[in-house]
Image (cartoon, rainbow over all chains, first blue to last red; front, side, top):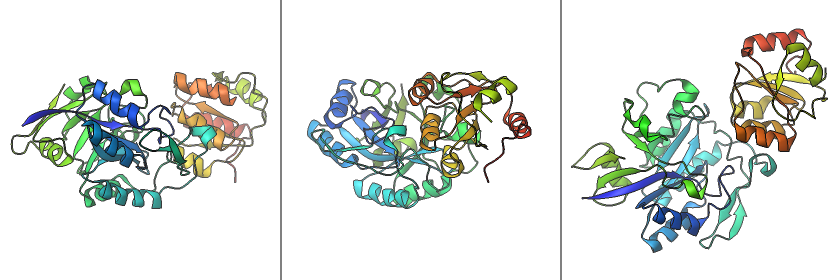
Length: 238
Length: 114
């Protein structure tokens, strides 16, 4: 068993609200510098930069978890973290089928698709900042259908969070964990395991908040066991 | 009715784009879900909300709204103001809650478009 330090919620330049410098090599290097063993790439409603980050991470010995931050019809943000890119892409198909609108770059910012070297190879035309027409429950079910982990984003914040939008956590929601953005909020009692991550939109924020897991290896499967305290795996918040 | 006139009659405090207040207000829309405003507001509408995040400016400029009024004494975030200045989008604040403000606007002749 070893300690894996993870920041499971980072954006790339694909998210319109993220800095354009959030590119492949820069993210990986900054994560290494911050002492992370594992990062999750979770752009808004799209996963088109995940593949290049995974490849670049592999070369540098950094585990990159394929993920996405989905916006529900209630405008609540939910992270989906997956074992494989294929599983994630199946969720992306569902998101795209249920995400209306086209991006207005002037209003919300560019949505850059990059290659391994950080060159811009395209732009996502969809309104990624928008909300899907899917309910919270539908999103969580879809994440689970593809063997992913469903984590409610930054629930200690007012905006786009489960508690901010709804005022409470609905009973019986099948979340695998809740994420807080301020480590001190961890001490609050929730009915779910708690992780803390940076939700970085800028390079300098990568690793500002992280969660340590005692696990066999840096994989979603192991994280899943740690969240459920199975077989000696556990979450060590710091 | 012009925005300037509404600001005066309802005693609204202007937080951004103070040089761009002479726009005609075509109607009103009240909602706190950005996606709802994107889908249903109309050009020239005045938007009443409690959301203070910078994305409100993106939504308002995409839909070419006349301005945003924040209710319940809520103040826009610094990034919101910065963006609103660039977009020349007036953001006003009031201590009134949504229900009260919308009622006053309606009685002044600002109606929901449709």
